[in-house]
Image (cartoon, helix red, strand yellow):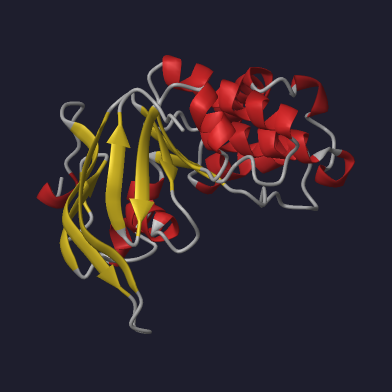
Length: 237
């Protein structure tokens, strides 16, 4: 295996060392960010608009590349990673989006199964794992429903099942409660917390300070592209 992508189960699952990012437009998105997130942590990432949250997540997913510093995620060195290895990195993570991103002409089962089919998993395994993931998010009875037959909260739970189905080491949730009502927001974070309790690392961007206060997870606060707070016991305000 290429030394660049050797994985191990020790040490941080995410590590930023002196990471800075400036876009071609001249926008300074991140400046000298140093952070370590260990396997099994649940971390909220908060900050005002333009604080650097989106860039932070894009760097982790290797949608963007840092100008300086080193980034390691799930044992991959993103600083040295050639483009052809990016899909390997992304298979180790599940991603939950604010806008759901379900495929409208596929039913719930097929939306969740899609990622498994792309990598060639056997049908028997797909049936088993998709059913398990849908049961975990309370949607086993909706497997044949189409996305337009679901509420916003149900669509987000399908997105969560899709993120879970390949048993990732890391789930990245980018404002997963942004398009659902407050009650469903708590339900989504409760589900993520239950998944985290089984050992999956969760990294969640949110602007909802009520959620951050009520779920006592680690909180990283960004402002002006810098980490201005990192509280292991949660957020107090």
